[in-house]
Image 1: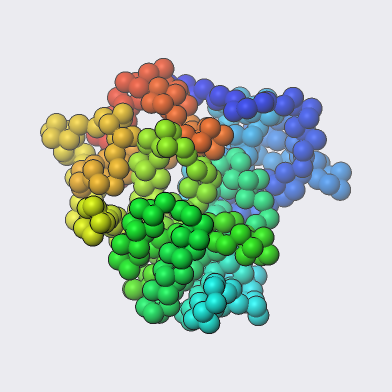
Image 2 (image 1 turned 180 degrees about the vertical axis):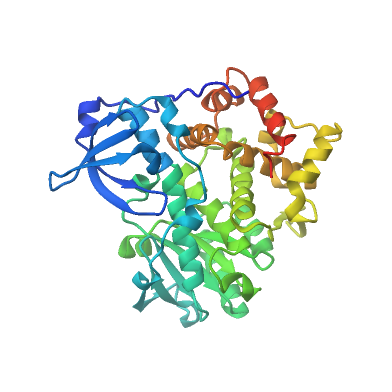
Length: 415
């Protein structure tokens, strides 16, 4: 059974009186927001004060999980408030007003080539830069995935600030190749390690999605986040409707990486497993299937391109893994999993990574522990050591966490 969750303070914990004076955005599952200060918590209700000095009383269980984490840390609420209500699917339940999306007159330009001129669709949190195809479905998907992160992670909205993230939607093969050439030159001018540049170049034309750093002047001019998502559109059907499997996977991983921030070389152990598992969990949980393969460049010249995937039928990953674990043909090991890289993967390992992410997102208590782990990475620039990871998830030892994870995998709760 899962141990009682311990919420560990990250950094300096301010007094309630100071925090109560902070005006912040409070969010419901369906996406309605209110700007208010926290006055107090009374049992299962919270009393807020709006800037107009109007008091509002809300049920705690109607608030986002991120808001409930805030109440525990700064409102004196009992840790049990995270267990209230159903986790649901905030990404699918939020109401997105697509009429607020706005086409901009000024295109986004990269380099000197007129070929790299992108039409822009602006949403509340994103700029969708397209080379011709309609971007509305990806814009809606991005906003839904943004809401899911804000619903689950206490610092996400605050850290995002008023900036926007760029998502390139490139359906022209020549434009996509030109974008790759531009990025190689940009990285070379920025004096990035040549091996890294060669590896990016080797996989550029093979992948369905990647990410790029944006020029500093562009970031400053348009108030952007410096990392952008790039879609190499080969199957238009995946981009014609909101919340398709592959875009959900990519955007989920990109937003989690944005929230965790970078990690140092010595603290990167586990980053791949955490990010990859989370992306597959969101893809399968929200869309009911997976259409994502991991591509890796190997060899001394990065000329050996390999694809990694889970079991053939994405809809039966849980059932297949459950059977293998019960028959002792696959043995989940938490510390081993944190050491895996993309080159280590086989179908069993990839599905194990997915199963751990599903486990971390299976109850409000576990999700709160996972959110605390993300905040630890954000503040320390490294994945916690296994014992600290276990404690953030509410356990006294790695063995206890591993036992609970295995019990979950072999139960019908794992789907």
